[in-house]
Amino acid sequence: MSSKQMSSATSIDRDANVLESALRSTEIDLVIFDSDGTLVDSELLAAEAMVEYAAEFNVAMTVPEIMERFKGGKMADWVLAMEELGGAALPASFSTMLRERTAVLFRERLQPIEGALELVRALHIPFCLASNGPREKIELCLGVTGLLPYFEGRIFSAYEVGVWKPEPGLFLHAAERMACAPARCVVVEDSVPGATAGVAAGMRVFALQTGEVEPGMPTQVTVIKRLAELHDHFSR
Image (cartoon, rainbow, N blue to C red):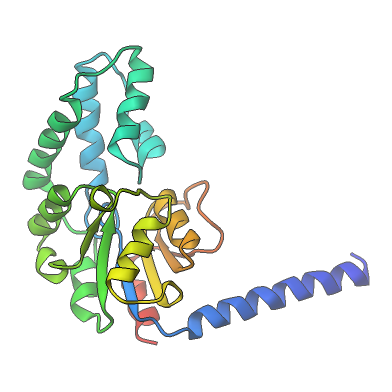
C-alpha cells in the first residue's frame, strides 16, 4: 500500500470513529422498539402457521424460506408472493384466517424475547413501540407476554399510519407523536426492513441478531446479540 493509500485509509477510519463517537455522545430522548422478533418471539410461530395454511392451497414453503423472504415485511406482500408461487389467487379471507390461526399459536406458545421484560422495566428513558403489524396483533402479543402495561398509549401501527417499514415514515410518525427529534431517537429492531427504516429516519439503530447477521443489514447499525447489552448503552 502506498503512503497516499495509507493516509486515505487512516482518514476513513478516523472519520468513522468520529461519527461513532458522536452517535454515542448524543443524548437519547426516546427508544422506539419493534415488536416481532425484538420484544416477542413471534416470528417462528407466524411462519409455522403460514406454512400449514398455505399448504391447504397447494403453496409449499418451509419455515426457513418464509423467514428469509418475509421477515419484517407486511402481510399484503406475503400474500402476493404466495399467489405467484401457487399460480392462483388466494381467497379474500386468506389474510384474516391466517391471522386467526396465528393468534391461536400466540395464545398457546408465545414468549417474550429473552431480556425484554427486564429491559423495559429498567428503562428511565421514554420509549414506545412501532410495528408493521395491526394493533390487534401487537396488543395480543404484548398482552400474552406481559409487556402490554409498559406500552399502553405508546403503540404505533403501520396500518394506522399508512406506511410500512422499510420506509421511514412509521418511525418518524412515532417520534413526532412522542415529541422527540429523530436524531435523538434510538430504534431497536431485528429485521433488515426495520433497520433500514430506522437508518432512513436518521435515527441510531440497534439490530438484534442472535445468529449470523442477516444479508442486507445496513452497515450503519450497531449489532447486538442480546437485549441485555442495551442496558449499558441506555445508561450512558
